[in-house]
Length: 278
Image (cartoon, rainbow, N blue to C red; front, top):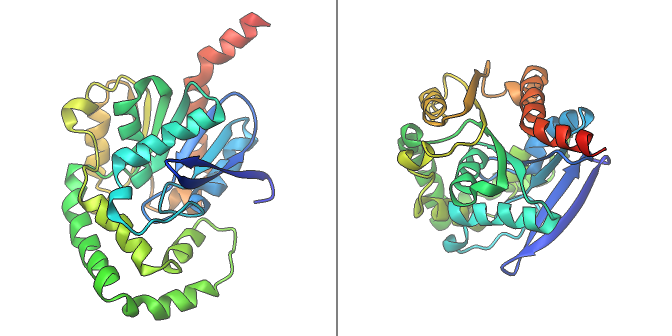
């Protein structure tokens, strides 16, 4: 991560960590998945930086290098959206392309819903909407219960994960997850359960913001039907199907090329304005 600038800022008394890859006026804020961290997206960020984009990876509250309060009410979609907007304020940005994977995609939709003037365009990878919520509840509720009431079940795995060295691979984010304290994980899941996970469909249909949507088959949580339905709902969207859930992290060239082309188009008017001003 030597090519990245790491920093932090404060939001409502909490410390939020972020890192910046690349330089220039075309800023892309790329958010991680649930309980993961910035390491999930570093390879993509570095590749996009080589194409001239500035990519900012924010660790949302309760994740990565940011503070991890153990109360549920601090972990809600609308609060994570507020943190993303606060990052733009901290960086002095009127707008940016916002995007994310899984949880990050849902946070992006929430930012677009509450602060559409701050969102230049959206990159939505594996969104979890109405079709995936039932599976999400079935998967995460037992995990939440064990984290809150049987944390000792996780101690052996946590001990093992804490001695696993980082490999600079995106899947390091999963080792970081297992190494966390059960109370921290339980708080994030509890907060997620008591709040809305996405703006309602009628609100999504009003989001006239360019969007690149990525989905894949054979994943009940990140249902392909959710991604394709979202592409139909958003007035200005492009959908591409990934070959697998891991393509963007293990063989990212095709996905990064799509992202790069989308980001260039999203910022094209800025480039033209700057050229005219010169």
